[in-house]
Length: 385
Image (cartoon, rainbow, N blue to C red):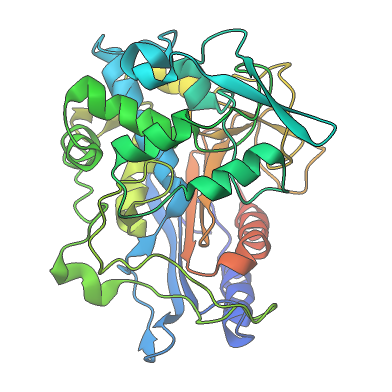
């Protein structure tokens, strides 16, 4: 038995299962890590970092983490809340006046009607995805077609212009009425910029990355890291459609709070260890214990889910999905475990009951759910004591 209480034979099965995905060309390559009891229990790199050029995967590969950016931005917001510079109850319009007169889009008999929101969206709504925003790639509606027409997410558009474009669009939902995963964290990122008078990347560097020694996490990786960037297959193995992830070598004006960061497994592990430690890492206290407790608690309660993204046994906190009870979902875990993932193929979960966290990073958008669910199942299967 290992010092971490993880069964070596079960970990070998995990490696074999992940390697089968690589050999079957379901994914190009990956890095996977498990920490338990503050000790490294598993670290494997498999397959190819760059399948087109035959470059093997390495433990320190740099990945586009997409929506795993959101928990980091959420922590950045809570740092400001602990400094008294921001409040969960703040109306978003207090910091971004362009949202002072938002409208909700209601589709009636094929026509889109715009009605005033019944209450202002708040910073709390942004963090728990109840502000009324959506994503344009969900099933088509009149509001989502307006999102598509607005060409949201253009990397040449700065955060302020991105938010201005969002503010000109109708909301998908009445604020506070439903959980709908969408572009709320893009707006939260702009709130952080306004409150701090800093670009998002600079603020996150000062408030999160430097204190936690996350030295290889950024929106724009330096030239010295570019040879370690992981790349996807050129085409999805199921559909044959081209895989288009953003070009990390091209300069971008947008610092996308909803999905623009690049990171490594080692860097993200430091972020997760801080959360598992109730806000501390080494001598650094980034957040208070009760702040982390609140972030990783369910803030939805009876609020309905408008989009089927959360598993049925999960709620949502301030930046994380939170497991609220056992049973009802396909993924194992303890009540109170929390995590999130990124659509390019990255995922993590933290389990305070087991004093454990696990990270998986690949660049395989089409195989995202398949790999994530397999990984989580086999990690929990390795727990012996």
